[in-house]
Length: 123
Image (cartoon, rainbow, N blue to C red; front, top):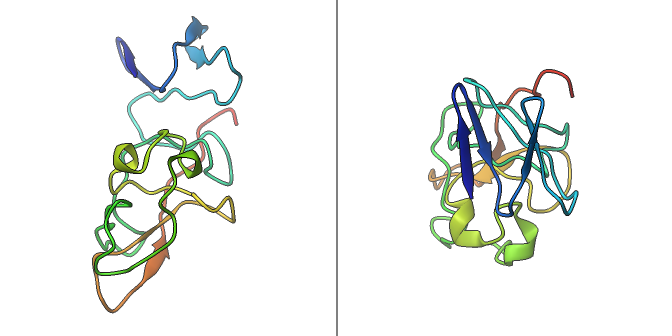
């Protein structure tokens, strides 16, 4: 679900409440709101719902629903803050709850790389 307020974008998959320019999900699973820039609300990136789809070195990310060029086991919807593999598209995510935002790449020479997404102000 996408909510828009002038100058702000909130991407959530559940209804949310607008409070002082921050959307809060009633289930308290995530708080996510961005202004003009794309940023992650947590240092590990597990709640990131942005649209960055290139790695820090500039390689385009492979779609999470794809097994080519890199086969992988990150195929369960619960692994993604989007709620499904298809909704995660080819955006940088942290499905294994490890260190930070990353993706499999479309380069057969590079299996995966971290993504360069800044931490949101105030987090």
